[in-house]
Image (cartoon, rainbow, N blue to C red; front, top):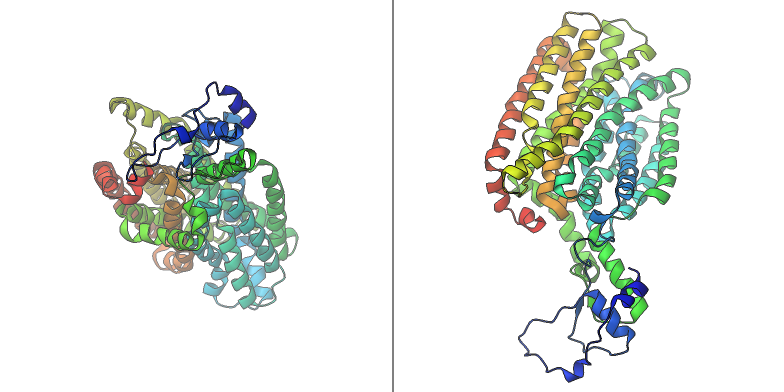
Length: 519
């Protein structure tokens, strides 16, 4: 806040409060704006102890409110946060092409243990957001993201020096735990920066990172493991994360309104000497230990008591688990069934990139347009349920993609056919993920980070477990029936979930204390 400009706008002087009659003891405390208290303190009038002053945004167009930042400033913050979101999922798959070399060097003989080196990272992903997201609702987004990313860099680099299978599994778990902070916090940042009607494009870009990053990691990992030692898959990802950490020092800005308002209050106290200022969020400073425990429990409460979170977590778990089944088996399909070299097989990941790009572009164009159209038809009142329509066709796409991929691989059709199926599946999965994230952010507002943390926990547990049974599923059922099974499960979960939220979402939100607090 620029206090000098604020004081220049003040044209009147209040009388000394000693001349005012004392209000009744049971009357509400008078609230004045931070403009008034700055003026009074500057003039040396003083205030009685009970005359508390609320520090809040100076109107709906206050430029200090992150929702009123310029587009350039908002998108700088989004891309900075998205780079952190991108980095951790990349690290989850960059080691995939190096697994045979790791198994050979560390004497890993069981396929399930070899897969655990890959998937244990996602178990850390499942646990981390339950702590990191609530912490961000006390200490802000930036502190938590940067401190946890620093710890991720340390433990991820340490994986390269592991000499036993036990050491690499433990270090991978801790690296995943520390690298997971952005999974919930990134969604909270979107809630901080955008009103619901303008949020679709940002959610699409944010949701693209966790889908695209594993693809990039697998491709990079293939070339690194082919030309250097497996250790460099860890060193390279750590070095890239160092670059992102340094760029974050410049471009990553705090967006969490409760923290910004508390900083504003502190600046006013320092500038004016006033001691009677308060914000609606001072309890975050006063009882931090109690508030921390409350915030840490909140994602579990959401998962245990909120049908919205339960439904979306189940569906998102299916989506994420399927994607990691695809990643875990993708190289084997091309090397063992189609006889391609490892580095050439990695190029088939381009089909995942194509599907992701198409879905992100379509959702960017369509999501907000659908939301605004339905809002106009609803008398100008937007609802989270207006994010659901895109989920129905997307569910059909992802199931069709699984059928296409499975049976074209089963029949060993031309290599382009499984890639087309992959693109269709990934496009549908990403569109559904965007819809899920947007619905959670719109519904839980200030608690969006905790809501997304709850969803991410179940999602990452699926990402951890699904690849471990993928080899047995494909060897037992074959590609065709495995793809059909996963496709039918997608229809069985996705269509009822979309219809449930579309028809009864408002009913569930009206009875949720967390959702009502957010609106």
